[in-house]
Picture 1 (cartoon, rainbow, N blue to C red):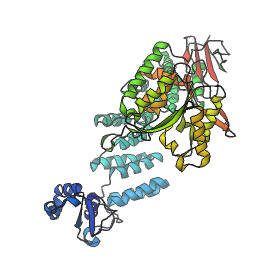
Picture 2 (cartoon, rainbow, N blue to C red; picture 1 turned 90 degrees about the vertical axis):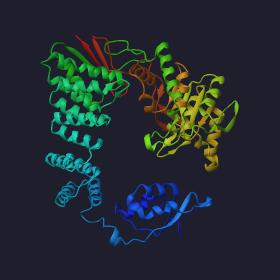
Picture 3 (tube, rainbow, N blue to C red; picture 1 turned 135 degrees about the vertical axis):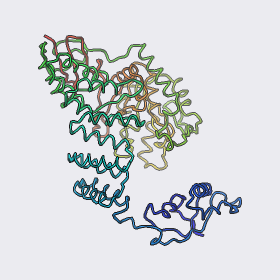
Picture 4 (tube, helix red, strand yellow; picture 1 turned 30 degrees about the vertical axis):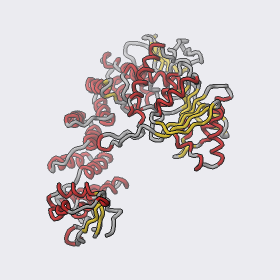
Length: 552
């Protein structure tokens, strides 16, 4: 008997026998016994093999069972998949057309499939729709949609999103909206991209009420809080400007300004012209608009207004700390693998950890509860001033540069700061590292506190916990966006968290000669859109550049 390594699953054999994929049939194969019996018992086509379930299997070979597979003739049992009457042929060819951006090839291939009366699968139709919409061939899009409906081909999330994008480009917002509702009725949860094209089409057609109804729909706290493309906001402001004859519609642009504040959005070049145009074309008020900067103390240099402080109040700080601790208490936050459903893997919470500091010996051990050990190790030795996300700081083109981490530690060591470095245990694989990297690891343990969590843990929870409980003066060195935390926050807590990040997170901009570190600094004022009713201050994406608008 020959144990097949390539055919290690009964489904692989079934695909060969039932002409679903190309390949040769093996004469002998070895498979997991449980899956073999399950497949044969649930496939009436394989009654010939049901006798296998009655075969005697001794105790030694319970896991695997070797069977004789009749050497079937490819000519008699399997059609050539390179013929133009096989769906697999069209899927492969259409995928190639998408990769090569070959619209003519895709059109020719679809005409061939229609002439041959071949029913394609959803993926093939989606690829075709993507290409014809990209080239504004809307008649071909509509024809493809009718064909899918005629053959009862299943519409998936990509199908609905692609079709809605096509109808939106035609400014047919009504059909795009019906597709969105149909998708929702089938239990498919929409994403931001499903709303982007629809919002653009509705704004272009001056559908003011629909635009803001959709915005309210995607901004439902704790349910469906989505972040559309920032170009959508530009389209909505332009819609308000076009409808300045109605003061209510014109003034509704301030709702977008408040969203900028709520989500911490800075005004980019694509938004700046729309914002300036709105203030300059106000039908009832005169606004003085200038580009200005803000002093280190937080005063606008144009109008001398004091901007809001970046620090949270003690009550808001405590609320944020409680919410983050609650999120951390849910074990899923430690998972690096965020898959769910059938793809969700069993998460092993335990693992190897390492920790140490200048005043204690380096410890490497197995831990049944790594985060509990981290908390016990962190608290008795006092607070820290700087928390470093080691993997984020050291990341460089798919590998970790330890010299970057050392440079950041050296930078804060000269200011006599208490430093905590957090990373994963794989950084401690000294036996596989050159001597210079082992020297850097030794330097880190000698000059700051270090904690390495297990490799299968997400390290976000560790350094975020250390930074939040540290108080008002702790700074976090990382460019992480903390999506795993933000997605479950209520709107008030999300505001607090984003404000805390703006006031405590420092990002590295560059390194000079591997020793000097250049990074952003957190100002004492909040860098979000601010208003007092008589003036607006909007930060741009340029360093310390603001739009100051004063009502005259």
